[in-house]
Image 1 (tube, rainbow, N blue to C red):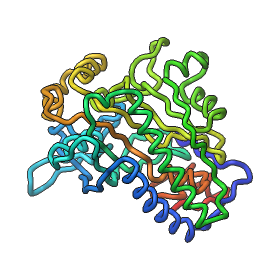
Image 2: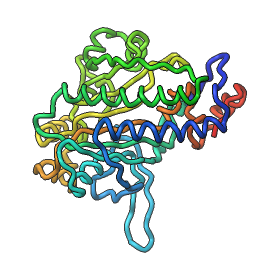
Image 3: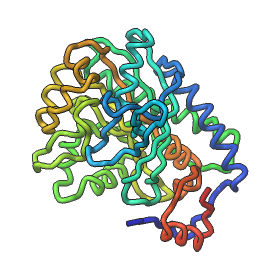
Image 4: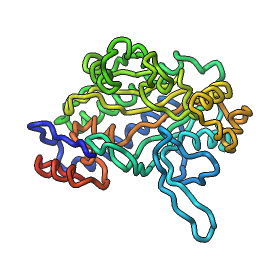
Length: 336
């Protein structure tokens, strides 16, 4: 069910022409800032993979990938949900070394995305990035430093955007507040995870919510995470307060990736032991892949946030339900 709403009195700051040029500006400048901050090189990446490789991201484990047959190869392929696993294999194949990494444009179709609302679309575009690290780097301190570098790149991009388009009044808190999902539950025990995020971000404006995936004291996780890419003890989400929508908006899910020990533990916890037979997972369990940190940064969400847009359809082209189209039309919000 769609849950789109347009805040009363909302009017876009930039028209459609300037919006299009500003999107290009944001993407160019942020890519440069991110690559410099994290020592990343741009690479090409797949739109689809073979299911048997185990390389597709299973997300929360319930989403159905879009699949199709390849007539003259006698094979079936799946459109990627993300490149969380592929990137790690690519770092090995391309010969990257500790301290360096890659980033790429990732485009995906998430057919089961729900609800369709101001932030969620069946089309996903993000910068997927991954970096080789050492065993000694698998710490909360390293994770936090990386988060600060990413937020710094976002703020730098916003500064440059506002210099080009002075009419933009978006502000982002540069100082990130770090909190674990359990600490968040302890502070707001009677709230849902989304309500907790809103309550915390309303006060702190920029936050990194850590350790997502494992069960909390309540017996439920803050949010679901696949067991075979992030280490649930060393991951998290970057969120900012969105003044236009008056709610928290997640810009990135990221983390230090599983090593042999954490993968073994998380596959058991998630009851996904059958994945141990997939080639990617065998390589991980055998220690044949580099240790890495990585994540995805939403391109449309970042553009939406920096440009002060009320709906993600104002910065990306997708297919929408009739309710969303009606609500936006009545509010004079132009969907691309």
